[in-house]
Image (cartoon, rainbow, N blue to C red; front, top):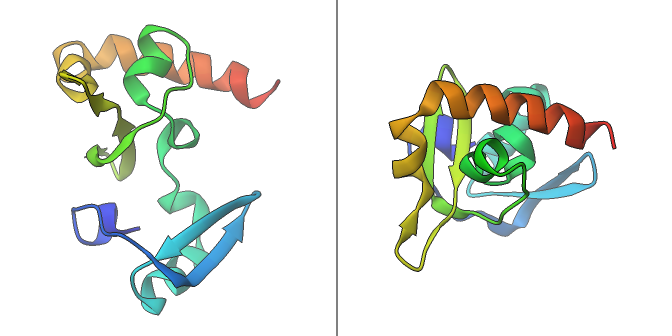
Length: 112
């Protein structure tokens, strides 16, 4: 939510939560939770919150660093960033190709 509303990652509170599609979401303020509840699909990160680069380049689900993200066309993309590997940098070098591949790969993951 904060990615789109505030343009940054914000740690949520354990006391302001909701569950959507089996995943628990924490919010910094109740107003953000309430916005999410009105239209959850609008605020969900792409590829189930897995690393966008890994989904496109390797067809893999890889954990992300929530501080490493990109907002494009109102959608949130999350990336792995650890051990001298920031996949957002690699994504930006070939975004069109990687995004098309990630979209195809994620469709297959969703239907398994």
